[in-house]
Image: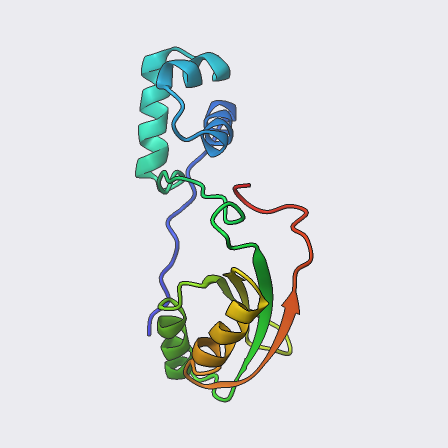
Amino acid sequence: MAIDRPEPLPDLDRFDLAIVRELAGDGRMAVTELARRIGLTKTPTQARVARLEAAGVIAGYRAVLNPIRMGLAHVAFVEVKLSDTREAALQAFNRAVRGVPEIEECHMMASSFDYLLKVRTGDIAAYRRVLGEHISSLPHVASTSTFVAMEAVKEAGL
């Protein structure tokens, strides 16, 4: 399998960085307000936003949901060790993990374990069901270790 090479990074000046920072905080901000905040007029601000979108620097816009208000306050981090780490096994695991909605994040690690999962559920009983019925039955899972978060000190989007 060929490895995709990333496109060269665009040159980002102080206005581009200011746009990215402002939109990361409020993606629904009107262009006129964005232009005022970064110190440009509307037209060049619109052109810069379009260029940042086309370059993939701005990948999209979405609603940031509050999982606590949605009854999903329980967070567990799960170390996963696979029984097979050949490419086909890794790809099978990657595909399967995308189908488990409670897995909020999945990272391949350079460590004594293969993957680190962030799993969000309503409570420990719900987590136990997800672990037993979904995570443990993912392709090539040999073992798991769970670490329950007591408090989120800093979390993206919240």
